[in-house]
Length: 160
Image (cartoon, rainbow, N blue to C red; front, top):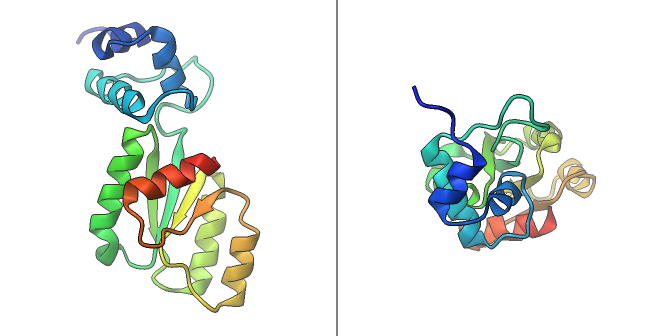
């Protein structure tokens, strides 16, 4: 087995500087979406893994976004597109279904409080506890209203 991929390997393959690769891998927003996607694809292809002695969580899980949907089966195609867009921008998604249950929805908001942001597809309407939980949500969130998955992710990242 060969030696692990380094930032220098990624930079060479992606045609960018090592410092730019570092910005991307550490979640700095000073990089265009197109360049970020290219660097992340090269990193994935080379099997890059953050060294154990480096600060922070292993790449890319440190940039985690929660997604709450009312029904996994109905939202599967949308979730797949959302995940593709998020990965291209250096984020990993974690999905959960509220099963249209307001109590479970509120629980999921609390469960995802450790993520960097939250995408909420069709939150329960007219439930006071859910509305209160959304108002008190400690992390940035978006509720897509007919927008494309790439717009949803970009709108959330602007809030992070």
